[in-house]
Length: 608
Image (tube, rainbow, N blue to C red; front, side, top):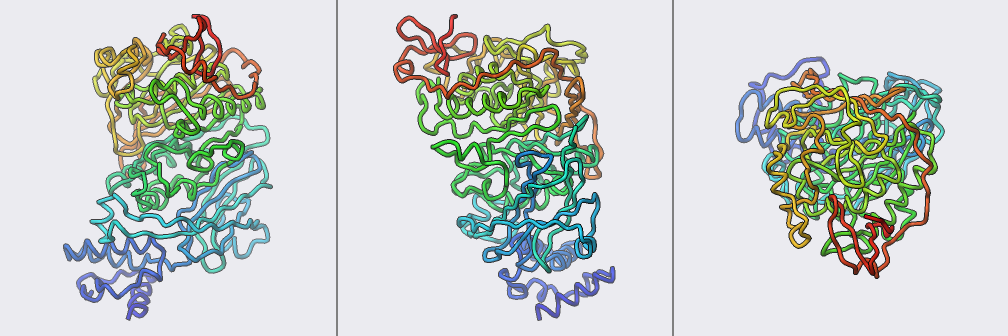
């Protein structure tokens, strides 16, 4: 019955004719035994169940037709899904790939054709197909819907349901610079859709990339708004070379997380971007889970993890690459507590002060000639909304500001705060804005939600400090900018109350917001163009499902002075004797006084 009915539907649909819903037998279509879960991919079967549940509740013509469509869209269990390409090493010659299949399906390769718009027929007939083997890994048993009440209610799948998958990872390491590639994954008879990317040019000139963040997939609204943003980004910047995504892919972390949320990120929300370019991801706090979903889903450079003894929770969350005239430092502060850290006053973290900071220095030392140095992380060193009073930022500033200064980082791209925030350039010694480094700002009417500063645009010089940027959210979860009065009331230099999630330690915090500062109230993405003389930021809101956008803000980042050569030094762990000294705050930073001498969180003696 099942196969006959499916062939009947597919036959009609292949001729471009949909069966009229009033001719269907709802009892037959919605029968629990009509289609067996074991025969189909997890994503397509769940979508079928969601349509069936909707039809059970309301047998409208639209719901019945949607069910017909989902029956026709069922994919046999061998089909690959959740596919993605990621920057992995030298983007001139290398690319990482990852995809999922159902448990037990271990066959699979990635195929590439050096052509911009190759077809399935090209892959079958062309003698220019390059094939790379994949390593299959069976995942842990992962909760599927987990805490996600929407997925439970919409599909009828119980929250206790768990699945294993096979994660396939492949690496192409002999690509040709400056070449457009089409790629697919799977094996004979079970190939994915075709996606695309372009390798970095041998002598890369001007190019653009995307910044999107914090999709927090949890229900239909979040899926749809993130997809709206992805569609708009690809339509607006069709030649973008890659997309940076600094975490919070999903809403539900911990052991009860929802793999269904990850599935929807790949299969729906970010699919337009994934098919057009590689991703540059790192993890966020909502992505935390002992199920290590992040590790299974991405294939980025894992050198950092292999080089340290106490491993972070996920693979490939801290890595670097050079693209054109920019050194990208993608890193995670999520594992700050590993090995040891100051739990009471949060003045130091071995993971950050030793491993991450040392890694920063080595990357900058080994790549001294790039014009710009850009970091990408989920957590904020500076932010102006609800996360500004979290207990972690004082620790991050204590550990990372000396590193940002020493490595002369030009731009820090941040996520986490879900608000549009232009910050600095910030003097790393006293946490003040470098106002004479800013020019060409436009004054506009102050709007408490849209723009609290009354500034737009501007040119920001990073010779003496780092420019910090948060590009709001590509999804629906939104925070709102804090006022000057609120920031002043939240300030404290009392270490006994600093870590209560109600206070920060940055004096005159509001002054750091030197450009546009507000909530766009729509999914937002930023196009960053690397030009000969600047980094140009153009931020857009996605206005509808057709890819239409509105320009939100335009800025330029310039650097007039060459970077100095970074001293590698061995990792510096603050000696225990210093750690036990007197902690105090000065100019928004935490210091340690011991035996009449003053040290920063890296164990470096300073004079105040």
